[in-house]
Amino acid sequence: MTKREKIKQSLLAKMPKDAINQFLSKDKTPISVLFMSLLVGIFAGFVGTYFEHAVEFVSETRTEWLKSEIGSLVPLWLAAFIISAALAFIGYYLVHRFAPEAAGSGIPEIEGAMDGIRPVRWWRVLPVKFFGGMGALGSGMVLGREGPTVQMGGAIGRMVTDIFRVKDNDARHSLLASGAAGGLAAAFNAPLAGIMFVVEEMRPQFRYSLISIKAVIISAVSANIVFRYINGQAAVITMPQYQPPELSALWLFLVLGALFGIFGVVFNRLVTLAQDLFVRLHKNDRKRYLLTGSMIGGCFGLMLLYIPELTGGGIWLIPNITNGGYGAAFLLLLFVGRIFTTLLCFASGAPGGIFAPMLALGTLFGYAFGLIAQQLFPELPIIPGMFAIAGMGALFAGTVRAPITGILLVIEMTNNYYLILPLIITSLGAVIFAQLLGGQPIYSQLLHRTLKNEKLRQEDFPRD
Image (cartoon, rainbow, N blue to C red; front, side):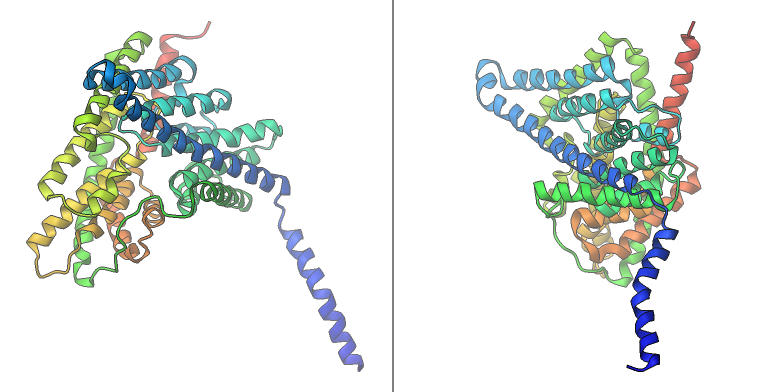
């Protein structure tokens, strides 16, 4: 071997070691934080997945009771009212008695905690949100389990930091954000959307750093693996797979986005108005609060018998709509009806989210828009189901102001990767028009309202 060959061989032998040392010298990420983010994701995956199973178990048990024992003792309508009222009572009671911060979606609470202005009392939020959500969602109310899963994921992140006595503020923040990402990834079987939700929607609160990004990704991936291990790898929504639309029809998706941008601003304001009306109704008195909530739950028990399309989170409704069989007039009527029921349930303070109801609303209006466009422009190759999927992302973008998250969420939920271009156009149009009208993102709006009410309560009842 020549001297030149010996020098070359020596350099090659040193390169891997030097490269590794150089990488490690630049990467200062504590391995402990990454390990804890893995634990957070695993726990969030188990909690989120079994929360879904628990809600389904309650719903199925309620139906079985109606078919067998209770239904044979009392009239069916009365049994439906009593069972759903009792389930709703459990949810409202647990929230009002033990954890008021568990009311509603819970996502604003996590955003406030990431900003350092809201506490995370995980020891009471986790059981109240889990069992209270089982009651409220199991009663048939128009609520989603995704917001609660995000809050429980964030609570798990804080729980892990407390158990391991993490003192570093950046590490605690990263693990809180990791829990939120893991919760959403487990709720929708959508790891990319879970990551992007924290990075995009929570951008005012999220501390961008290499360690926080790594922790969020690890948590979302591990939570999603747990979900797929338990539930399988199929998409959450089973629906037709569409090919890309013709370029000549793309302008219609922009029109749809503009309509959703306008509606998103109006919808967000209606949510606040409805919440204020409920506060005036029950005045935070426990008896009035529980009575109001139980009556709402009972009414939805009746609606489950006669108008089931107006009940539940609405995820089950999406494939039914896209498979056809509904006229535009019926879909628009159902759209208006579900706006009312969504506001009624969410604004009442029940432990449930608004994610799934918004996706259902977007599907209803989007499909109706597609049917109308098909009649108005017969020369264009229009498939209404494409507009239904685009509507899901557009309403999310118009209300939450997170267009990339909405696009990824819809694609992962439906497996319709070929519709990415119309989804981008529709979501971008919704965000632009919503911003032009000056409305706030819904979760920021809800957080500001919570902080304002907290301040008013402290002024009314100052500490000694």
